[in-house]
Image 1 (cartoon, rainbow, N blue to C red):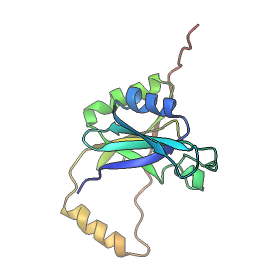
Image 2: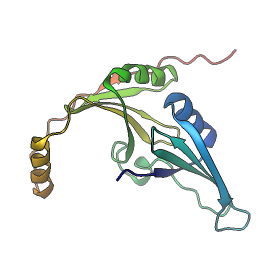
Image 3: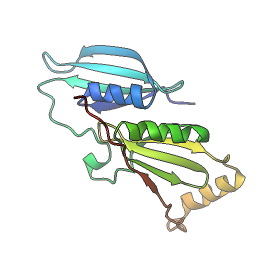
Image 4: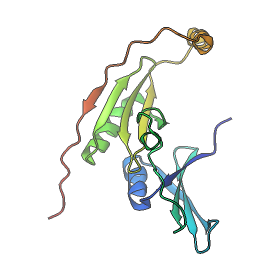
Length: 175
């Protein structure tokens, strides 16, 4: 069963909104507002349609809420690639999606994983975001290997992928 939505925190809803609407192409479809647990505290819960499922962000307005990291990997001491958001794309669309990020001043990494090709950027919250395009369907061999590796305490390692880096284009600031 597919998920309905994934919800994350943001400290800069304006930047988050621009990234997910202008650079990812998602549509804002719902905003819910309500109180938090503390007196005078409130929050916005914003929902973006990612193509049938939703990505949501919480913006907290609560003076009693302690400071918190929004970067879901590096904020807790993990490499940026551990916790990330991956969205489905078509292989033919990756170049245009990459250029859109670069034109907005964002560096992009590209990795061919063998079964899919992915491009990666970081959103305003420090979250790694991925467009992932399948290049072949996963088959019975993939499933057998998955079972073997799952139960093997020391599985054989795949060769490390060779990333390609695409530097951001210079963004012109208004005069």
